Image 1 (tube, rainbow, N blue to C red):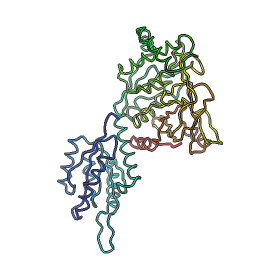
Image 2 (tube, helix red, strand yellow; image 1 turned 60 degrees about the horizontal axis):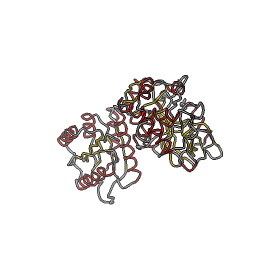
Image 3 (cartoon, rainbow, N blue to C red; image 1 turned 90 degrees about the vertical axis):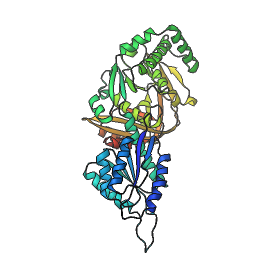
Image 4 (cartoon, rainbow, N blue to C red; image 1 turned 180 degrees about the vertical axis):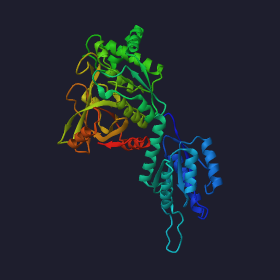
Length: 448
């Protein structure tokens, strides 16, 4: 992620409670937060917050450091005044972290009462419509570490999505209504803006390239992949399109893009599947078939992992093995290919007229997801699974994925909830992080 999430760390205690435990937590939990949470920078308020004066100094300190999220650890019981004052002043989410009691003696007092305090404070924050989360448990517990890590990753991803520019190379293919989108809803929900580049600009840029550059790229491509089956002229068009998009994408200031890959591109024998796969491995992410909503899932996955994604169709299920088959025309990034099954760069597998990778994709944990706008409200569809060693049994790029949900039930869920046909797949299990991001953005989640 390019932008780190700025965390404000503080430890609180009410005036009547002993200070030894709060001071200990200020030191130990402050060190943990500073070293264990990725995608963030931590600013620690240097002393316990107990009084109104402490709170005001902490607020000014956090404002000065432009804090995005506050982590409030309970050194000991704290009234509602501190958390509500922080929420009112900073207007940012607060994570209320309640460690467990550390000392139990029959004849001795409570020394923290943090869980009670967190639930009390959370109820007050809800009443003033402030965003908050409660985390219960000690820093040594893996569950707690994962909860906090997922939460911080979600907020960091939201921060990194906000302000991105989504580029459109053309609009959507003919009759693909599900690839239509509402840029105002996307701007309001994700903070992403849109700009457009006509396909004619792409074609003109292809035509204007120096022949020496095109020839060198053709040679490089033919030396890297088996291109023997390509029709005459397709390798040249592949090289021209690759160089043109590589030039236009940064020139236009795009952070992500989609392209109308047919029918116009096919009419010029330059369907871009293999080009898109190659560019994805170079950090130039362009989704196919003009599908912006699938692209939103791809942006999220790329921000969370730094990995390329695969825009794909779900085309088949196998009840016996409880697997689904993801397939698309040949746009998978080379880093996703399973070389053991053989990889060729061929014509488009259905209509011809371009270049595509025909290959199986590698095994490993995957997350398939899509954001879908239904009646102006986005929903996140998310599916986790394990990509299986796959033998390609049709033209194009494909992988079989084993899932937990019975596959016939999965098909019913897709149908009942109006999910569109494209998914974005990333080779990592980030379903929890994606769900966390959806919650941050107030987007309902449908786990498939």
